[in-house]
Length: 325
Ligand SMILES: Nc1nc2c(ncn2[C@@H]2O[C@H](COP(=O)(O)OP(=O)(O)OP(=O)(O)O)[C@@H](O)[C@H]2O)c(=O)[nH]1
Ligand SMILES: [Mg+2]
Image (cartoon, rainbow, N blue to C red):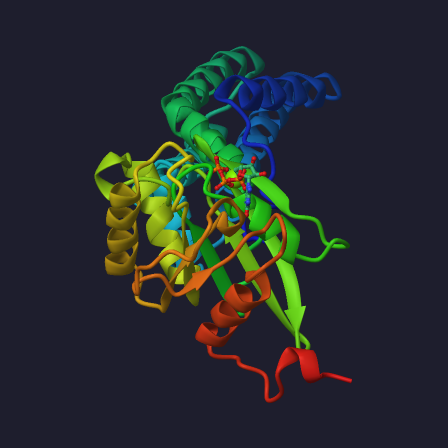
C-alpha cells in the first residue's frame, strides 16, 4: 500500500519542454537534408511536445476515484478543481502541438519555403507551450506537496490523537507504537502529520498525531488546515482528545474543553477524553467528562486509554489483550 501521489514524475517547465523538443528536432534535421530535414524536425518537435505534455496529465491518478482522505488533501493543496483545470490545459497544449504539425506538414513544397514554415510552426508551438507554463508550475507545486503525504491505509483502523500543543500527544504515540516501526513524519504545508502503527490481535492500527491541525479552535485554522482536518475526519475511526489538567502546557483547561467540543462536533466517530500528566497531580481530576487519566512518564493508565480507543474503533478482540497466551 502506498499513497497515490508517491510515484508522480517531475513536472517539466515550458522552457525545459521546448529545449528538449527543439534540440531533438535539430538532431533529427541534421540526419537529413532539404524538405525532408524540415519535415523530420517538425514531426520530432511535435511528437516530443505532445508525448511529454500528455505524460504530465496521464501520470496523475483519477481524482474522482481517490480515497476521500487523499481527495480532501489534494483539495487542500491548491484545490482539485483548479488541478483538474490545469491538467486539462496541459492536455490541450499537447493536442495543439499535433494539430500544428498536421496544419504545416502538407505545405512543405521546396526547401526554402519548408524552412520558413517550419520556423513558423515552431514559434506557434512555443507560444502554445508558454501559454501553459503557469499550469505546469501549479501542477509541479501540487505534486511537490502531495508526494510528501503520509501513507494512511484507508482499510486500516485509524485513531487520531488531538489536543493543544504540549499536552503529551507525541510522547504517547511514540510510547505505544511499535519500536520496530518508527513513527514517520510527513511535512504537509505548514505542519507535519505523524503516523505510528501498532498491532493488536493481528489487527494493525494507525495512530495519527497531527500537530498544527487539531490543536486549536476551528476558527483559527486557515483554509488548507481546515481541508486537512476534513481529510482526517474521513480517516478516523476514533479520536483521543488529550487535556493537560495542570495547564502547564500553556492553555487553560477551559479552552482545552472548548477544543474538545469543537472536535467532537467535527468528527462522526467516538471521541474519548484523556487527561494527561497524572503524575504531576496529587489526585484524579474530579470531572466526569474525563474518560481516562494517565501518565506517560510512569506508564499509569496508558494501556487503559489505548485499549479504550481500540475498543471504540470497534474491532475489539474476543479476548482481553492481557489474557493472550
Ligand atoms: N510529567 C509528565 N510529562 C509528560 C507526560 N507526557 C508528556 N510529557 C512531557 O510534556 C512535554 C510535551 O509533550 P509532547 O508529547 O511533546 O506534547 P505534544 O502534545 O506532542 O506537543 P506538540 O507536538 O507541540 O503539539 C514533553 O516535555 C514531554 O516529555 C506525562 O505523562 N507526565
Ligand atoms: Mg507533538
